[in-house]
Image (cartoon, rainbow, N blue to C red):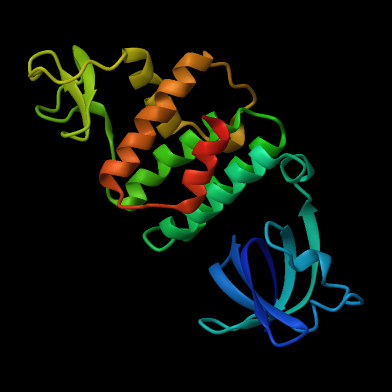
Length: 242
């Protein structure tokens, strides 16, 4: 069956001397493998459109639960600003590796939308740390370590919130507070905004840089403690941005 799919190339694997297999996160079918015959050849029409980090429309012979076959592809966005900046490439590499882990756990179509809208925002010049943190907050639910940002994690109250607790996985109210570390409530409010914001509708990001760094540190620690993910791309990104 010939099918037209929108997708992003997450990785590529050599296949013989002139061909490759690309792993594409698609809007329509989630993560699929596509064999690209002859695409490594210098004369191939598909050489440029089958590279990692390509966002395109792929015309394929689709086979469910099997390798599909590429006919051709048309690039949607070259992501040129990201690809010309080593720091932004590091963010993209991390988001791609993180997304590869998350799609094993959740709704691929929802994850696809989060991922694509995030990388488009970064390419447009939005703060890459903020955008990445928004993605990280949204992905926690799929990873099974959701932060409760609506009510007290102990009693369920939404009044008199004083902090957020790592150990309890969410907010703590004044009545339930037991010497937990006090986290700035500005951070709590921003984290909640991250959870509920629609990435596709973001037109402006205006957050104090000190708060951005504190939120990033909070999420780094939360991911390290609860997700069990140790990604090389994250380590590299931290070295680039610290």
